[in-house]
Length: 165
Image (cartoon, rainbow, N blue to C red; front, side):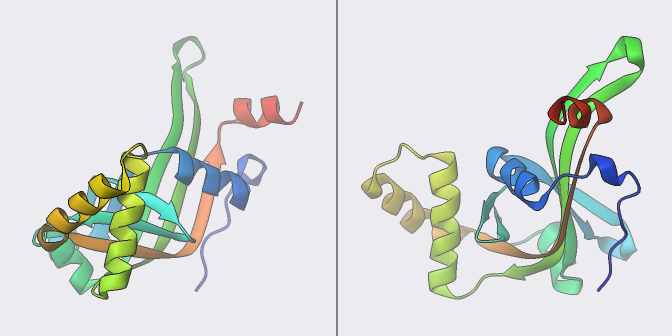
């Protein structure tokens, strides 16, 4: 499988920088092939762990229908976006990942995904609170896993220049 090379390669983030953005942020936009081949993009909370992205969602809906038809998707996370009006530009950094989505069914994998999400969004929770939340929510949600095929990140020229000084 081949992906396009970044045109402005000097502004490309390294793999480590892309992963740092994914660890740092809490939401992004998942894009799938929706009904009648229309693009469907939806903001989601996520966790990046072990080279994959995990999401949770309801047991039914547009997103799941789309993923059952076509498991390939992309996910975009914006790390920084500051408008500089007087220069007619923005100072930005973002990451886009492409991969195949899987609806987790194995109980151990499901639990691992829910635990990772819970720990990211409520790291101060006690083991008892974590277990209560997991036990109470597992039957009401679906855990999705994106196995990443390609990851790329880019930042504005201003950020690249500042980092290279």
